[in-house]
Structure formats: structure tokens, C-alpha cells
Image (cartoon, rainbow, N blue to C red; front, side):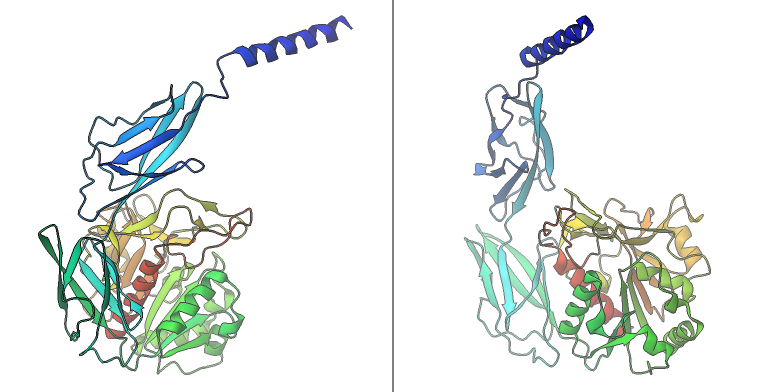
Length: 454
């Protein structure tokens, strides 16, 4: 009995000590105001995000923000030193034993809010100063009237509503506060008479079950008038592929390729398709098919294959993108929205992701050493890597084969950021929309058109 009483007194003493000690649960650690050059940010105290929208023309590469904290709070962000807010800036606010993490996301308004022709929206790239769009096949480009919405205080010439011949590139002069910059507009139409096919394991397009593959197929058939669906079973049964210019296999269902893809009658048919001038776009886990089809030497296919499957997955607070530094002028990257030269995001921060990846991990695995070693051993050209990799020596996320002047008739896109469908998270909550889906669509469309024109 005395032992029980002693233990009770010890617990009571501990509880009293905890309540009267240094852990103050009422200690505030909020940012109450945050401004950049006098522009107030919108603070979400639940997520810790501070969104600041700056006027067009603002330089945010070296600014000193103004910040007000709750009384008694301190921050590890030194607002007396100029900092670059072009990328998200993270900091922590501490008060007593409590802390809260914040992320400042600063956006400079584009001078061109929107640019549409016949209801079709263009992609406006403020880094490369380009306006890019594709109109339906058969559109007459000689007399089009763009509808242009501008940010306050901005003018443009030619003006919105003017009749313009877009047969060739058109220069638009954007002026604000007496300063002018040129934007180059390129308006195109799909390759006339192009026959493109969506390859799948389902018997018909309507029977596709993977949501990522469904989203990709829906976009594909709404974009290309000459689109058709081809199943692996139909290839096994001898379907004629001679009229197909480009075949796209987007396989997202499993890390391992399906057994039917390995059947000799299927691989022989697809090898013949290639040798007769057919072109292949292989994305997500389908990137591994380059080994099966002999596009690369045996054993030289993607060496790092992984990813989650529903309901597993995760939400990342960072956007995922790619580096194509050194290949900025390659046609498959034309018109992408970039955040700096040769850098583009594909998957927005805060979206649920499964990270389906089938790339080449270059430095330590496979004996490649670097990008040059990879090119020599695989016979391909590495076009992109992860966003941090300016030398393209760390990963191969986009590549074309073979590495010769002619017959570049295979492109692979293999990084986890290439994600067509926003799954719900593990709690069943729908993911936010991916604002960079336009880059995924344009990258895919450019790749198909590039293969068709090769």
C-alpha cells in the first residue's frame, strides 16, 4: 500500500512540475503581417503558407521583407539582409517551446493574363518571352483574331482583336511604365494526316481501369483527330500497324511490364514497326520497354524503377520538375512554362503523388559514371534530368534513341513528376489540381509531333 501511495505522489509531483515548468502551451508563434516592397502577403495560419502576388516588372531577387510577429516571438529569417524570393523561402517562428514553420511563395504577375484564339488558350512563358498554342487541324492561320487580357498598366501591340497572319512567328511588343519587351507568338496545327495510336493492355479504350492512363488517353483523343486505340492483344493477333506514324504507350498500372508485352509475336511486330519507320513514345513504367525491344543494348534499360500504388502515396510541399539545360532549343521543350532557362515544373507542391519512376540512376549504378558514359553505353541522347542537375549527369529522365542524325524514333519520359491524374490522398481527400499539367500535356504533344516529323 505504501508503495502505491509513493508512486501516486511521484506522478502527481511530475504532473505539477510539467504544468508549472517551461512548456507554455499558450505561447503564440504566428506571423501577423508579411510584406514585400509594401505588398501584403496572404497568410494561411493552418498551412503556414504566405502567398505574395507582386505587380508585373517587380524584381524579387534581392528584397528585404517587412514582418510582424506575435509578441514575444522570434524568427530565424533575417529580414535585414536582402534575399531572393524567386523560389519559396522557408523559415521558423519560435515562442517559448512552441514553433511554427512558414513558407513564402512569391509570384510576379505576368503582363499577359491570357491569350486565346477561337477559344483555345495559349501557353505564355514569361522566362523565354514566348506565346505558344496549337489550333485544330485544318485551321486557316492567315487571318486570326487573338483575344488578349493584360495586367493593369500594360499595353500590347498588335492589340487584342487585331486580325493577324500567324503563318510565321509574330512579335508582340509588351509595354509597361515606359519599358518594352518582345514576346514571340507561334501558332501551329497538328501534322496533317497524322495517324497516332494509344497502346494499352486493355482490350478497348473503354476498358482501361488505371486512372492515370485514362486521363492521358482522354487528353490524347481530344487532341489528335487521327487518334486510334491499339491493344497488345490486337498486335498479338496480327493487326496492321503500317498506317500508324506514332504509337504511345503510357503504362502506369504496375512497376513490372505485363507478360503479353514480352511475347515474341508482339515484340517482333513492334520491332518491325520501328524498322519500317514507325515511332514510339514510352512513358512512366513503359520506359523499360526499350530493353525488351532492343532499343538499347541488353541490360541497359532503366535501372531504378519504383513507386507507390493507391491508397499509398504522399503529398510533398515542393513542386517537382526537370532540368533540360543544354537542350533548351529541342522541339519537345518548345513553349513549356519555365521558372528559369532550361528548368520547368511538372507537378505542383501539395498534390498527392505516387512517384512512378523508371529512370536511369547514372552516377553509382550501371557503370555509367556520368551522362557521357550513359550515352556511349546506351546509344541514346539524355535530354533531361532532375531539376537540380544542370550537367545532366545524375539521372536520365527523358531520352531519345538512337543517338544518330537519323531515325530518332523512340522517346522515353520516365520521372515521377510525369503524373496525369491527381489521386485522392490516403485519407480519401481529393488532391488539389496540378497547375503544371499544361507542361505535361505540351511536353507529350511536342514529343509526338517531333517523332512524326523525324
